[in-house]
Image 1 (cartoon, one colour):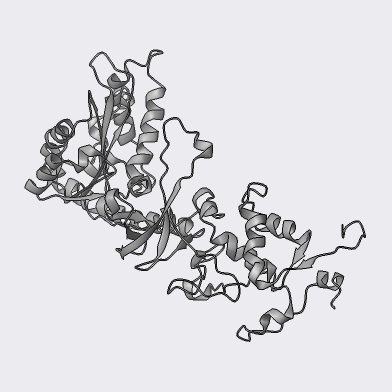
Image 2 (image 1 turned 120 degrees about the vertical axis):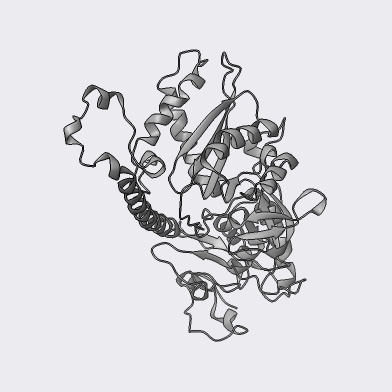
Length: 438
């Protein structure tokens, strides 16, 4: 009505009736749990009280239904955690790709094993993904050929979490690490290769997709002979000390007289070449890791938690018979029971309240509906938003502050600052001139 030049009459809501007004303007079926701006606009059509904006923000921030259904406005992105390796086969990553159409050899899955240092990758077709099948292939085809690695990294599939696989790692003194649930970014190297492998296979398989297992050795040969962006060398050079021959090399064979190294010095040259290549790979890998972390951390947006914090956890699980568009994927509230690293927390969100290790990208704080002038029911009186958001540069956590009841647009009246710590003088907003004070 103000836009039409007509007077607007609003009732002043007392402090004791604020929650009732907020309930009927946000929680009821006729209002539909809308956002902050629409709720404020709805209330202003006929009502007003000092601190309206901050109360609406605090009420909606603590709404349990909105917290379960609505994702954070900014995608969560914690700082990238890096792992450095120094020599081939020091740390392996493994994953299972499939299910594919069954071939003539009864294969339906692909077991992928990749080396973190040299990017040497093996892929084995297999008929099933049982623990004994996975363990047998890794021991017979990888460990027996290349040696025992220091660590093996995988997701939390039943094959890798089984007692059989655990005993194999214990027998060979291999450190077994795993990703957190629903966070495949921790196994990003092998996950990215899976996409490359599927793309390469799709270029050669038949129309019925029944011969994909016959093309795996050839596409792997092509992948290993190609220079990797992170290392600057091909996997063949780092594992074998030379580049393998291709059909083109056989057609245009280099004359013997062009070979610069005598046969009796080949072993020494090979050793020097490998040492020089490994040194360059360590430098290139570190530089590539730092570059990837720099670009990844430019858009950080994450929260820090402490023991006892009440949180929601994201579980992207679809229920049979339910529409995914109407499903709430944020479950809780749960309680943080421990902090492992900067990005990993223990939360009692498992079966029967058992603690699980959860990445902070899947956690968001559960906040109380505390209005201005009210005290919190828990010891956590402050409903401060601890989120860290970095856009153009990395800002330390100590420099990011957000106080309860205050926003970027300022408070609604100067009188609201009476009980607040004195920060700076705030002028009344221009639209306050439209109200008649008795």
